[in-house]
Amino acid sequence: MNDTAVQGGMDHDQFEEFCALLDTLIHMSSYHDNASISESYSLVDPDNIGERLVKVSGVDEYDGRCQTVIRQFDQIMVRGNYQKLTRPELLDALKKASEFGMPMRANFSIFKRIAVYVRGKVVGQRTRRRAINFFRKEEFDVPLFQRLVICFQLTEDATTKDEHRHDCLYIKSFKNIPQHDIDMLLPGTSVKMSLVDRGKIALPTISGLAMLTFRIVFLASMGLFAFLGLLFTTSGYAVKSIFGYIRTKDRYQHSLTKNLYYQNLGNNTGVLQQMQMEAEVQDIQECLLGYTMLITKFPEGATMGQLDKAAEDFIQEVVKFPVDFEVDDALRKLVRLNIVSVTPQRMYLACPLDQASVHLQNGFAQQFTNYNAV
Image (cartoon, rainbow, N blue to C red; front, side, top):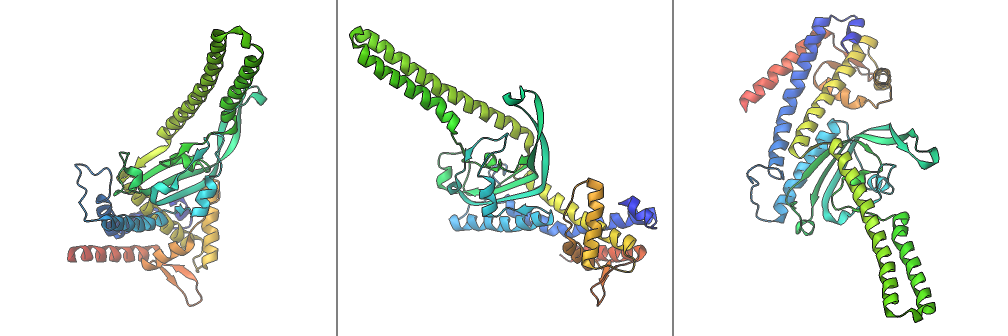
């Protein structure tokens, strides 16, 4: 961003000072909200050290606490440019497993409330080996969520035989999750037996019973011991098939655990603090990008559409894939900071850099005065 500003004719040191002022002011503006949700979450944090969870008089009170935290958490995730999946979108993602996932059966009845947030829908590259390709390594495309956050509260019935608590709110964060493998991240899911796996158990058992029946009819003269031997042989084959399926499921579960160990980014308070930081960074980046595009490319002012296109073109040139720039949110913040003005023709005009720095210094002084008054 500095290079773009300097190329646009701005002084490097002056722009650096402007960036530092903007960073500090946005951080101070976010401090109160961050402190508020941190305090609220400390009352429903399952990792609260020393069992400092405050006792409540009834279900409604801790439900109200969880509801308050989720409402505040929603606002943070919106600022961090996360998208909250709707129930139809979530159910659609659970319909099938990816190449790397296992077919799972999700049980939504254990959740009193659940929210799934995603950011960065991209197509990643994974490798596999198939018999049809003589087990040579091959790459294929997998749609991914670069970041995925799950926030949920369990029902009381779901925690009777579990170490989890129904009066707490759990927050978990992951990276590079295939879009159809969200169900593997949810508690209370079970492996869904595929037709192939069922066949591993059913076909040998049925064939063994059929062979047993045939031999009973034609080999009855062999006597009791021969009959029992035949029965135990057939039963043993069926048991072997069942244990083969169990080993296969355990292998899948081990692979899942291994993958999630490296894809898990944090839990509970750690995730909350990370999301607060990301929301601040997004606010700062949106404001810097919006202001820089206005003052370098549109010194006479620009419409919202013009700024949106210029910002998205710049982002795509840098990161090499399209990103949606929330121009209305960025302009609303810039106008509130008094470094962008709006003309009667709905044109947005950036203040000169020296004046913008003065406005930010005034805003900083006002914030400091407000904190002292409190």
